[in-house]
Image (tube, rainbow, N blue to C red; front, side, top):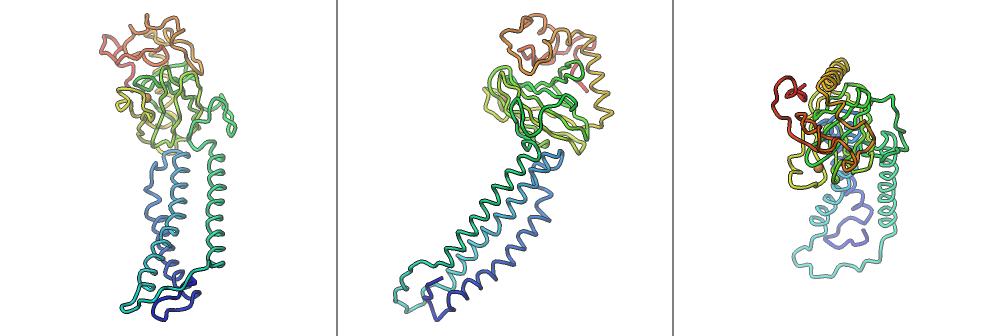
Length: 320
Ligand SMILES: [Cu+2]
């Protein structure tokens, strides 16, 4: 600081040192608090590798931002207290002509922070293959692979349905995922643009008609997660949510096999169009015909009807 106005205060270097010494313990304390107390509770939790990665990223950014904010607060407080006008002091402060040391420090520090964040952000996007976001139809970081569990997410006004091509293309309104298995989501839409936001999974991917949008996540905790539409898509957008579960691999396989057998038995699998990366509801010949007679059939046929109570086991098609 070139100005040393005020009651015989310390020379410039001393002010800088004092501000630094006040700031340093505060910054360390804030970062320790963030790392130890806040980080474990930050959204979106640790249900998948992607969610955990996002939680880590948020913690790192908070730990970078807190010292910057604290420096500004400390500087302001210091300036208000030390450099305030004393009673009876009507003198003008000395003119300022810049300060090479302050300017060089400022440019260096901000450059390091910004460029560091650029590198960090790029690495954190590439390593987890898109960090839970949709990578489009041909992801470059982690090419789509038939060996992973394939889950197709179909958005339409106003519900999500899910198809499992490795289980005969079965379609459900509920999303069950196995613990510890890499899941490859294929997100698409039948009408307007939606967005598949599985909050605790750390996955948010646009659901666009005619587009197969690939996203990844590997569940690492059992439990329930919420799925919401995150793209304003019409009147009932706000009601477009449901719940999914991460279950053990054995439970998942049993569930998927049971659903597949049931849908085969009551004719849903036959009635559905063949599994495809995208669907054009206007050219599916069965559209609006026999499909809607099957209770609760949804998604890829192009129409959604609520799961109506029916005789036999039709009514419980979508219960676990
Ligand atoms: Cu929507």
